[in-house]
Every structure is written in structure tokens, then in C-alpha cells.
Length: 90
Length: 228
Image (cartoon, rainbow over all chains, first blue to last red; front, side):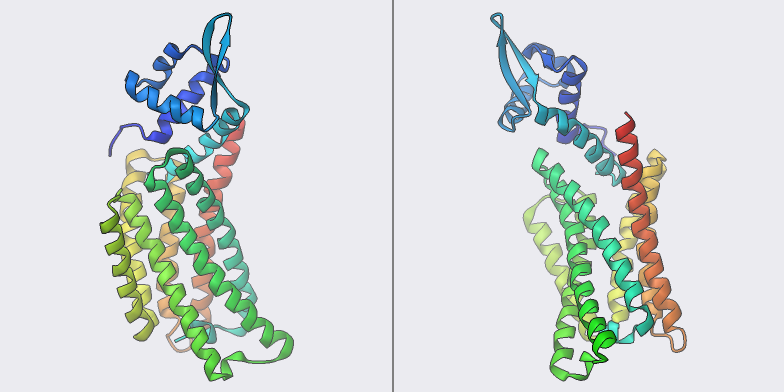
């Protein structure tokens, strides 16, 4: 059985990491939470932005990614989905 | 053969209740499968959801037929089965039901084996249609045997996962598929003269246990996630 993370797990890990860090995080710091290469992380970030789960904000000339309410709700849904799909061995 | 004619009348509402319960659980799992697919675009979640949608479709079709058939019988004392044309409609419904149930089991296998190539998926589903027609023309037993075979594979896969991870959630899923397979065994035995009522009831009770296991899984997940 493969121990490689699924796409769902990666998305969940990124969002949950952001939530643990207070919901706002520097772009470079997402790399630690996502545990991905820079190029792959960029793809995931774009997808999360397109789905309005995170948003890029500027504060005092610094850029942050902030988790949206939609993103927070999805963390809760993600947890349930992950548990269900794990239970079925997906 | 249309099996609702072979069901004891006094258990029509009993089996209908179990069908409705199974529909609700299947709908919930379909919803989560679809949601996982929308979020990830990973086809395995789509196939997984479609498997439960297929089961849901089968339950709805048979459930509606049971409602119409039972309603006419109980409220108007009118047996629709006496009309030859209607029997043909019932036969068609039965064929659709068989195809949807076998589709669901095959889709589970496709999902668990992580088959993503469209041509292979299409071929396997066409193979299921090919299996469904003999079930329809030959016997109800054939349909149940094919179902048990397909579910046997699912149980083997889920059993392996349970032995590897040993979690309650995986045990509940394994249990659900085992109960589903047993319900097909009982469905086959309905044709034994003198025992049809007993096996009819056992078939539905085991189906109820299968979906109760899945309800247990959903309930446990809902409570656990909420607590975190």
C-alpha cells in the first residue's frame, strides 16, 4: 500500500497548517506546511486561490496568504471526507 | 422473474423502510465522494461516489416500484401484476435494477484498484452489462452469484486494508460489504420452497445491517471530527 499523500491530503495539510499558524501565513512558510517542491506548491496555491479557499493580502508592504471563511469551513469538511475516504482505503 | 411478486405481502412496508434507510446512507456517501472529487479532481473519488449513486439509483427504482405496487394492493386491493403489459414494465425495472447494482459493485472494484484509464473502465462496465442480461433472462440466482463474486473481491481488498491498519472505521466498511454479500446469499435462497419468507426477511435484515455499519461509520466520523 502506497504511503504517498493523495491530492486531498496535500490540500488538507496546507489549509490545516495555515489554520494552526493563525490563518495568515507568508508565502514561503507554506512550503513547510505543504512539504512540497516549490513548483508543485505553486500549482496547489493557484488552485486554492481559484477556489477562494485562500486569498493573497498585503499588510505593511508584506504579502500573506490568508485562509478564507470558505477555507475554514472546508477544513471541517475535509476532515470528514478524509476520514470517510480513508475508511474505504482510497 | 420479478422478485417483488415473490415477496410476502406483509413485508412490503418492512422492505420499503429498509430501502429508504439504505437510500439515505448511500446518498450521504455519494455526496462526500462527489465533494472529494470537486476539491481534488481525482477521478477515484468520482468513481467512488458514482458507485454509491448507482446503488442509490437501484434502491430508488425498486423502492418506487414497491410503493406503487404495495399502494395499489393495500389501498385499492388492486394487483398490478395481473396485467401482462405491466409485468413487462416490472421486468424492465428489474433489469435496470440489476445493471445498477452490478455497476455499483464493479465501480467499487475499479475505485479500489485505482483503475483510471477510461477505455479500461468503459470495457469493465460494458462487461457488467453483458453479465446483467443473462441474470435477467436466466435467473435471479445468476445475478446474486455475480454480485457475491464481485463483492468477494471488494471484501478481499477491504479485509487487506483492515488487517494493515486495524481501525474501527475500516472494520465497519468491511462489515458493511460482508453483510451486503450475505444479503445476496439469502436472496438466492428465497427460491427454496417453504423458506421464502424467512430468507426474504433475512436478505433485508442483512442489507439493513450493512447500511447500519455505514451509518455507524458516518456517525463515528461526525462525532470524532466535531470533538477535535
